[in-house]
Amino acid sequence: VVESGSDSSIANACPRATTDYRVDRPVYETYARLDADREAGPFLRAEFTDHPFWMVTRYDHVLEALQLPDVFGNEVINPMDPHMSVDLLPNKLDPPDHTKLRRVLNRWFAPAAVRRLDPLLTRRCAEMVAELRPAGQCDLVSDFAIRVPTEMFLATLGLPTEDGAQFVVWVEKIFDGFFGRDVEGAAKAGAAMHAYFDAAAEERVRRPRDPETDFLSRMLVAEIDGERISREDLLVICLTLMAAGLDTTRSMLGYIFYHLAQHSEDRQRIVDDPTATPRTIEEMLRLYPLVIMSGRVVRRDIDFHGLPMSAGDVVWLGLGSASRDPRRFERADEFVVDRPNPHHLAFAAGPHICLGIHLARQELVVAVNEWHRQIPDYQLVDPTDAVTERGGGVMSLSSLRLEWAT
Ligand code: HEM
Figure (tube, rainbow, N blue to C red):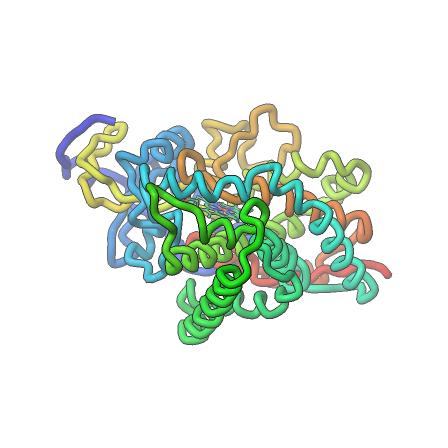
């Protein structure tokens, strides 16, 4: 990165992005478009929204930019909606404030903390699959994929997992609002959830639990630079964890099962040897990266590998196109279960690397293994079913109807 002013002639020569990534599309079509954009050039100019932005498409550049928070700041999280009304913590912070808050949060999502959830995770996944099995069919997305991360989210925060059913309703409504559908319903659900977390925090104030093991009790006494985290920030953190952790895990399970339902050899490998599941999932995270971008704002005038950018420019760091970049991965658009060096960017990298990376991996592995233990053989109810993936930057399958013999 070289300090510079903006050279509009080079910028004008940049290819224009031709795809509006806010649009829902038939499953896998978004990947084809991301691949095409990446092959059109390392940098593209996107003008399909009211706020033009730069797209960085290739692996090496995306990885480098993710690791330069002093150049690419986090004031903007979604380049397609730079003035997003939803507040997210710790996402919107930059170092040093970001580093301090992550230090407080990291321990709850460290591998040891995730291992403590394992017995509950395994038991609940097994129970959910046992409930579904006699019917011989289900919608994987709404009947299983959203329920697992919702209950684990509640368990991580020390809240009753029995509240899961109510949470699923709120969460669905909130996601509708995020993507511009039922905005009013989303606002109501957001308010209800805000009140729920506030009541839970209030309860901890009245009857504190052990801050070593209870998230909310710990957050109420945690100090950053000698000051407590405000109640409002705590509630924003809870909503962020919910927003960042539930939709993503649900979505990934959708892509995983969509693939496995149609590739019996990959399914059989898991059935025969559940220890193959982690590497199967890792390759799916790479091949079907559902968070397709990370938004950033340029903090000072720079020249980034020949592209002049000005302070204030909005940037799309193409996590999705990078994880499928043939310059980095051989046979990048194929499922290759034993990749020697599978460092994809599905969870991003650098200071904002996904906080829930260990929890997400564990949820995916346990959910997939418990499912296959009880339902090893299944298929799409109707292979011509129009499965759509949601536009907006975080892809998700609309539904996934599976059937099996009982
Ligand atoms: C398959 C599942 C998941 C995927 C693919 C995923 C992906 C990502 C990505 C790409 C980012 C970086 C965004 C950016 O740089 O702007 C991120 C950040 C984050 N994720 Fe995840 N995530 C998943 C699950 C989870 C879970 C289960 C949690 C629950 C704790 C979680 C919490 C977060 C938080 C809080 C951030 C913001 C981190 C920061 O800004 O420091 N994620 N995730």
